[in-house]
Image 1 (cartoon, rainbow, N blue to C red):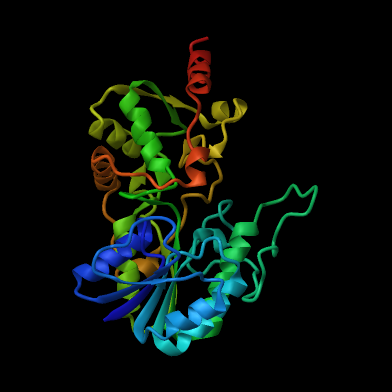
Image 2: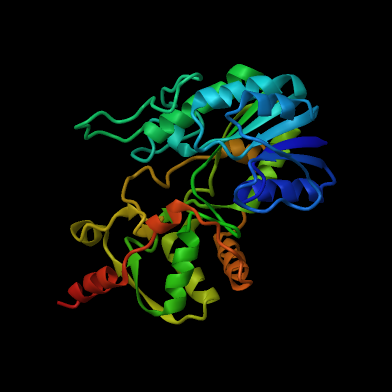
Length: 343
């Protein structure tokens, strides 16, 4: 197998590259060389995905059995479309990493792989879906952009040659967003740890290595389709997750569970101040039967927690990404909420 990885230097892209090399595949990567480090053993092509000339130069390096696109989160659909059209004659399949945000119902209602996808044209620019002034409804901008990018991949390659991967939250070694690293750091600091909501609440994060393995499997699949890449509903819980964080960091802390309504009253920012916590009923109610039937296997979350802590202990250089600063509650605010519980 010969594959082209769009990106390939950090987190999921790096995991895809490493997994492909372990299988003995030939790997070409395409990126600007501005973040991350190239994996030894790959053929590197430098360029900008928004440059037509760079894309033509890249296509001349083919052919490939598949393209695995892990790096288009900031690209508007029309740029994904332009790139996919240039690469289509040089590649057999296209594996596009999307998101559950592409569904109209996320995070407010339970979802399956047959749920309605947001509107988003294949040729939309970066302004499509932006919120008008005064809008107080759902913020569907990112989801519409990703839905349009999905349609762009299908428009260029055809449905049978495209696999759409829709993960929820991806965790694991190399994470740059900072959700799991923040919880691990908080657990390591010890003391009373503000634990959000119900310890029995289901959560569905997946390990980056499992997402990479499924993407590689789809690179050699015989048909296309859309797949929700999430852990089974109910298998993992917030309590189990936070307990695993305490276990690997030496059990220095004590979990203090605070009900949802109290956190809302104290204006805790959902999804960011306490990562993975969100009260919307559909956040962690995502079915993934099609993905499991197609071979997706999701390891226990405790293994992901342990591997991430081990990675952090090696002195790994965290990617300087702006989203990391969004995550984590300030110690003073955490202490204020916990103190209020004693009154």
